[in-house]
Length: 199
Image 1 (tube, rainbow, N blue to C red):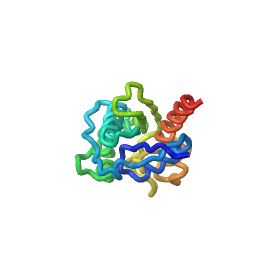
Image 2 (cartoon, one colour):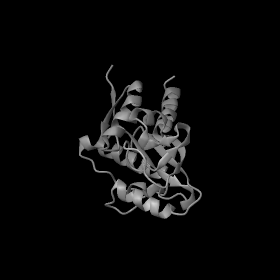
Image 3 (tube, rainbow, N blue to C red):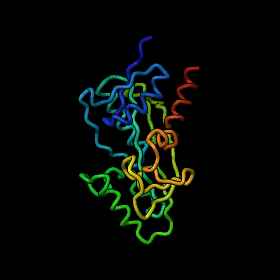
Image 4 (tube, one colour):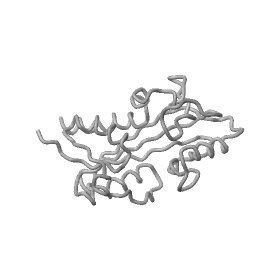
């Protein structure tokens, strides 16, 4: 059976693989938007859902294919939800992951409440003007350490302590992290929605 092509609104190879593993079960072939020469649109939403919708709609418009996008980030309670939507550019537009972690550590200095969560929101559009997109979300709760631990992962992983595993995300093997992460939870939710429609 020929698979239906779906464009993934990201150029991140890890995300492409992660999404492809789930979506292939439903007859989809996932293609990254970079393969169509598409740049990401400006993310002007005020929530993770809005930004995921903006990305998915733009990819669907540019390719005339179904599209899927995710928007995710870190939300720290003591900072009123920061870095939130700005997780990837917390320390500025050209900031590296290390710059962002340093800014977070500086802002968290002296904070007793170190609770935080990673959030992922995934949107699936059948076409550009789909009025009823699938929307799935996942959250993973932990706390922010006072110093980095672990060599794996990326972003804020080395500062995010995950109590059920008694270590940071950066101390987990990639496969282990993928099984429990916020994106894994959102993907599982999307999977349930797709399975419900395909009954």
